[in-house]
Amino acid sequence: MSTEVLFPRISKTDPDPEGVVVTWFVTPGDFVTQNQLIAEVQVDKLDTEVLAPAAGAIRIITNEGEIARQSSVIAYIEEV
Image (cartoon, rainbow, N blue to C red):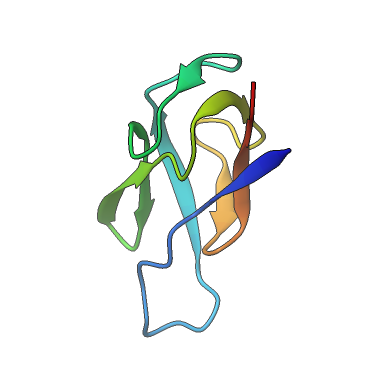
């Protein structure tokens, strides 16, 4: 089973704004624990941290520097 890692909703003024994945603190295949800091994202010059919603192996689908919509899937965590 896999758990989605979502780009957090930062801006409430724009109904569907885009942001960028600034940094991943993990690499694909790394084992992460629930609530571990795994990424930093940015919307309208506001940075926020992304925490792992579950434990397991990370599968990144949005690379650093890539644009993503808020609330979109940027990675998956596969239970091991």
